Amino acid sequence: MDHLTTLLASGRLSTDDLLHTDRPGLNALRNGPAWPDMRKRVMAVEQQRMALLDEPLRKELLERAERDQAAQHAAVDAGGGDAFRAAAPVIKANTDWLRSVVADKGWPTYALAGRDGAKAAWLLVQHADHDPVFQAEMLPLIESAAKAGQADRADLALLTDRVLLAQGRPQRYGSQFTQAGDGAMELRPTEDLEGLDARREAMGLQPLAQYKATLAEMYGRPVR
Image 1: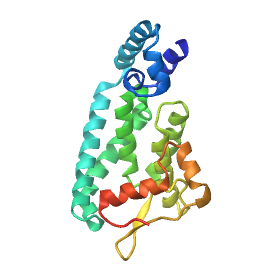
Image 2: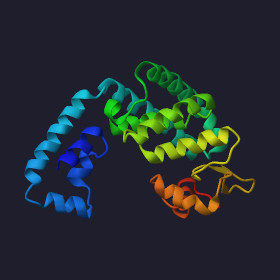
Image 3: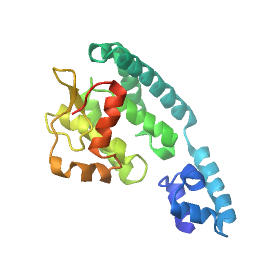
Image 4: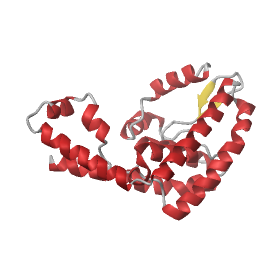
């Protein structure tokens, strides 16, 4: 129980997971005699965590991520390609704002901005392809946060691929695709294809075949 409380306080285990996730070990814990006392400790940790959050920062991150997603979805609905140019002003404004936030407060970790706020911050960086230098500068910050349990490993993997490709190097986790001349989407250059799924699993990513199926459904075109 003490170990679980420590994980909660560090952000390595979410309150929502502990209270609601359907998992054999957690189910057994919730059905055990020590659970009522543990639940009280969980709720106390959650209240303390929420009190330490930078709520204005979290709110702004979520609002900016929402605007980003609205612009991205509009571009996808318009057929992608050149339609993404319409999202450029939103992306640039978000990038400029986040740069100033990081300079002032550091990377928005779980502890600083909550899990949803940290995810929103990653999204803004992930879409800042117009500024690859900024993406590369943010990568070690997210990597450090992920190692401390303060950022998502999958987010780290996806940004790693963007940075590597922008530097003219093969991606590592196979997250980035491009549109071929026949309209199909195809995997961009990737290192060590034989070990790709193992690397993806280690970062919390689904197997490549499943990811391709997801992309095909999302974009409505073949993926190879």
